[in-house]
Image 1 (spheres, one colour):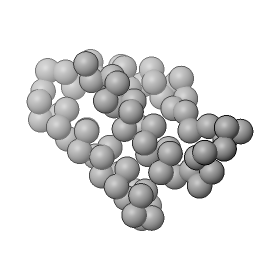
Image 2 (cartoon, rainbow, N blue to C red):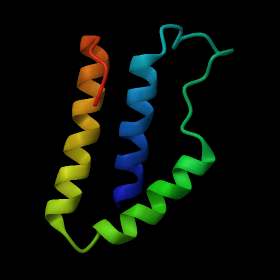
Image 3 (cartoon, rainbow, N blue to C red):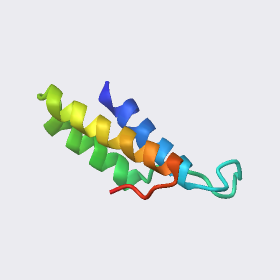
Image 4 (spheres, rainbow, N blue to C red):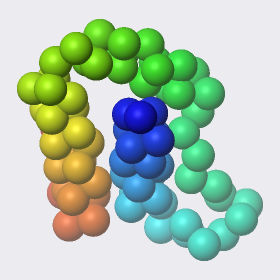
Length: 73
């Protein structure tokens, strides 16, 4: 299923951007509205392996950029 992968990558990006990621007062959670957008957009992607690959690659690149300290595009 795509949803856990997409939500997980979004969460990793938030964690990489959060300097206080161990502080329970500053959680890194994907907002519910964004979850709904992920679910809706996945319906359009599910028929195309290229679209899935592109989206997952973009999310992984954003996580890598955050970890490296570079602002994602």
